[in-house]
Image (tube, helix red, strand yellow):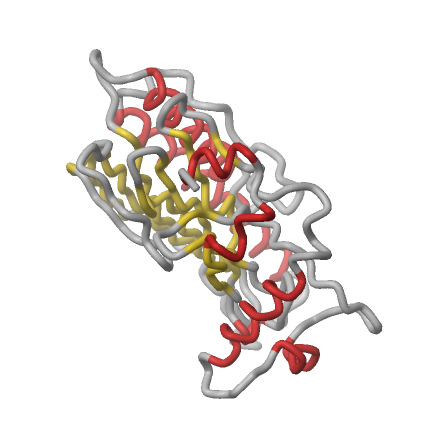
Length: 290
């Protein structure tokens, strides 16, 4: 078994799409990074967490605890189509970053390896011994990156890439997670109920701009051939991932296959605050200081 292991590194700030404005009161972060490989699998983990300590505010501790929970949920169900846990939650001190990371590296690699070995043995029963078939190595990359920060909020991007044979892998995870720095609350309710209908022109405009980036000139009325909608369906859904704030507006991201073919990537666009403001919840307006 090959291992690479690195903890913690001081402050890493990565931006996802349109990055948020940083204030002078940035939260310090630490990076937990590990990788592991077996004959059948390759594993990478990279997690950025708020740094906590004796003098840290309760909000930072709450955000850290939520992110550790997100990491636990994803890694413990690695390669499980049903989302079943494959090993227990870490029960040690989560501020001991070296012990925390070593536990999840070891347990995730072991569980991932067992699942891959089981799949390999099953597939062998369908293959002729002299066919030259080889098991394609499985890959799993889990990441929590700091995506942006303002005086009032902080954004983390939690994603996972998984490849278990086939033509290509896929991207999943929780997506962007925005926290209120005042109390550590995870903000999910950005939009008012019943906003989907009135927001259709904004969604169509944003998607048209995204597909036009490929070189085509796409208008909001030309989207039908670019999208995977049910026959006769005209209403665009909101993305499953929560939007997140940036300097320019609220950023929306659709996952692979959610609204378009795999080749279309992950359609994303920014709706300016002056356009999205009528549809924002009171909490969103307060957090964004609009």
